[in-house]
View 1 (cartoon, rainbow, N blue to C red):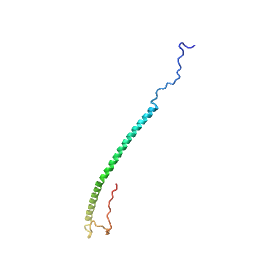
View 2: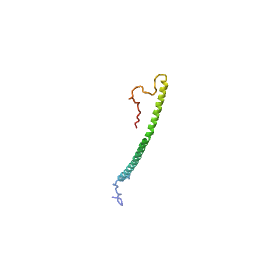
View 3: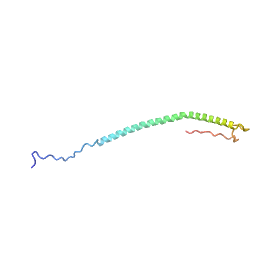
View 4: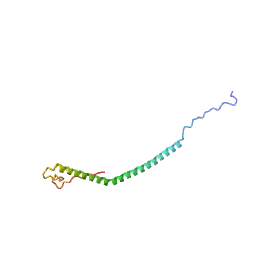
Length: 116
């Protein structure tokens, strides 16, 4: 016969522990992280665009200075070469330093081109 007060109730329900946040909470967290990431990406793009614009304008403003410096250097080198030619050819009769050796009025000395 059953004991007094009856048998103990049978535990048939699963007693699983809490396993973490729900799917909605995870989806909300992922959405928040992605939104923050895209916000930071947008700020980085703006800063990168501004730095590129600044670099472009600085190059535009430096080109005349660099061209003038290159012209001064080319002139200094040409004068030094002319002085060396005068020193080397001083004993040759009829030699004119700096005069073209091609005897053609159409000859033009090479010009330097600076590409940016």
